[in-house]
Each structure stands twice: as C-alpha cells, then as structure tokens.
Amino acid sequence: MEKKCLVVAALAIAPLGVPAQQAQRPAPVDSRAASPSLEYRSAFEGYRPYADPELARWREVNEEVGRLNGHIGHVPGSVPPRAPAASAPKPPVHGEHK
Image (cartoon, rainbow, N blue to C red; front, top):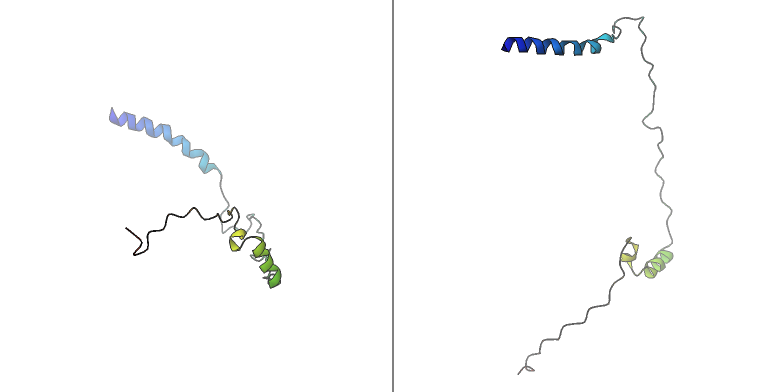
C-alpha cells in the first residue's frame, strides 16, 4: 500500500517539470547563435565634480543667528527657550536658622 501511494505521488509530480525544460538556449560554443546585445553604461554617467559652496559674509551670518535666538533657532521644530520656573525657596544660611 505504501509503495502504491509513493508511485502515484511520483507520477503526479513528474509532469510539472516538463514545461520548464522546453525552452532551449543555444549552445555557447555555437558561433552562429544569436546573442543578446550589450549596452555600455559608464559608472561616471551623471558625475558632477565637487564645487566649493559659496561663502557667506560673517556679519550677515552673525545677525541671522541673533535673529533666530542663537544656534537653537537653526534646528527645525525647536522651541524658543522658556522662562525659568519659579525658584524654590532658598535654604537658610548658616546662622539664620533657628
């Protein structure tokens, strides 16, 4: 019984491999066989050489930093500095405590 099931399973699976074998490629040693054309693309095809960025005048940059409330103003989504919270009562100085 076990052998019969094995034979049936093998016969059921065997035809699945046939379509994959139908497409034949020409032999690589056949000089008359057509080969796909190759297209050359340079690795440097869109290369742009480095260019130094334009320098800004220091006085204008300093004024912009001052207008933005310091360097933290350059950070997107940054919050302006908050006012200090109410301070806690100071501890007594030596000699003032009872």
